[in-house]
Every structure is written in C-alpha cells, then in structure tokens.
Image (cartoon, rainbow, N blue to C red; front, side, top):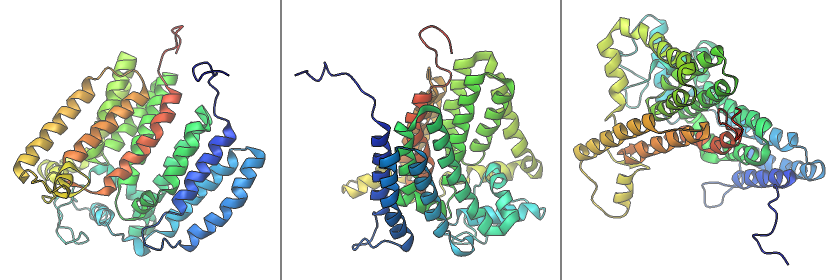
Length: 396
C-alpha cells in the first residue's frame, strides 16, 4: 500500500471536469430567491435539457457538448430577462442613453441636467468610453439597444473563456464558464440597467489582448492591446486598478518594446476625451469626478455595512472618505510598483486592489461585482496560459 506522498499525481480526466461543470450549472439553475424556489419556464427547460446533455457528455467525452449547452443556456437566460423597453432597475444605462442622445444632437452630456435618472437631475459620471461602447446599440434600437449591448458583452466574456479553454484546456475553463453563465446574480446584472458586466468584459479583453502582445511581440499587437486597455479605462473609473497593473506588467516584461502599448493607451484616452475637453474642460473633469461622494449613505458590500450589521458604530462620512482616498491612492501606487512576472499575477493584483477600494467605500452596490467576476474566474486560465513568462531554458 502506497502513502499519499508516493502516489503519482494524475491529471483530472476531462470527462470528470465536464461533468463537474455541468453539475455546477445545474445547481445554479436550481437556485432561486423565493421560499418555494420555483423555477421559471426557461430554467425548468434547461434542467430538462440537462439530462440528455449530461448523458451525451458521459458517453462521448466531447467538450463541445457541455460548452455549447452552458454558453447558450447562459445567453438564453439573459435574453429572457432583458427589461421591456430597455429600462432596468438601475438607472445607469438610462443615463448613458440620455448622454448619447444629448451628444448626437450636438449637446454636451457633461453639463446636461438628466431627466431619466432616478430621481431626475441626479449626478451622472459616465466616462466617454461608456458612450462609445453603447453608441452602436443606441443607433440600432435606442434605450433597448443600449441595454442589449450588455448582453453582447456578457456573451463576449463567455467567448473569451471558451477561447482560453481551447488554448489551455478545459480543466479550469469549463467550471469558470458554467459559473459565469449560470450564476443568477450575474444573469441579473447583465439585464438590470447597470454597466458593470460590460466593464468587466472590456477589462478581460484588455488582459487577453496584452497576453497576445506578450506572446507575439508584434508592434500592432501592442498598439491594439493599449487601445483596448484605454477603452476599458474610459468606460468605468473603477477600472483604474486593473488598468494600472496591466500597464505595469507590460513595462516590466517588455521594457522598451512596450512603448507602443503605453503610447496607444495614452493617445486613445486623449482621443476619447478630446471632444469633451473642447466642449468644456471644467465640466468634463467635474463630470468624471461626480462618482466620488455621489452616495453618502452606507450601503452594500463594505466594511461600514459590516460594522453596522455587527452593531458597531461606523466612522462618520468625512473620516470614511479620507480612509477611502488613502486606500485608493495606496492601492494605485502599490499596483504601479509591484514586480509582476505573469499576466495572471497582474490581473490578480489588480482585482485585489479593486476589491480593497470597493470594500472600504461607504456605498458599494452589488453591481460592481459584475466587473470583478469575469476577472476572478479567468485568473486560473491566465495562469495556465502564462503569456510572456520564461521557461527554464530561457525561451519565451
């Protein structure tokens, strides 16, 4: 009889991984919020379909079967929950629609008094990248098209997870895909009128684009990766920690070869901002900073809500704001200086930095975690890929 230390380490059989992913997706389909946990027709239909899918997966061990079922199931759940007319519980995308509408009519969205926010005239801080990303949806179908853009970007996350699975194998990719596709709260966040699903997708695109540049070391790849990173940064202010980590990794790993990346990032940010700077630099900069202190109350997932829940007295708003500023400044400084070795390490560091900022803020809506989820789920895949790392023989 051999001891645990003497047993050879064996790879997990692919069939086992596929069935585990299908089991995770099934559990998520069976999840609900009501006491009776009654399923919607869509979820019941997917549970019924699970039976032949699981059987076919067991018999054939072909990854295409669970991959197609999980991805299409996740998209279908999101499609069915799209709000009528595009107006979801959150007013964020409604404000984005109004901002784009003001812009295409020749106005300045940063000095506009908004009517579609709840309540009307609430502060709006959509960066210019947010307007650009949702412009095609606006042109195609107005507010409903702006909302549909988030579903498209959720589908893009699934496509990236599948692409990484093709690259590195399904051991990490299939469970990650199942969790992202089926998690009820992530389905909701795609359709609730927030933009964090799209922001998370763009950050994942930025990470993968940088990984490709690190592998191929081509100038055009560096430029594209820098432009994608700039678009992610220009879509959500909270993307900054991950953006800083990616840029620091590029410089650390590639040195002067990463100059096109940095240049493309800065030039793209300037081009996206230039029209609004020309309209009025003061109103533009003030608009971007409106998200700071937009909510003074304690709400959501943070240390202050935890303190209240434990019966402890939280700090007053002023002291808490100072702590948030110190944490955010420290996080950005540390992320810029860390000696990154791998893409997965940089994404992990950026994600941890983002969480540190969110968890020390007084107002942390659950929607923000729609941006964190795809990054966290992709980290094991990026670790398996490890673009830009060096082998023991010194080759890339």
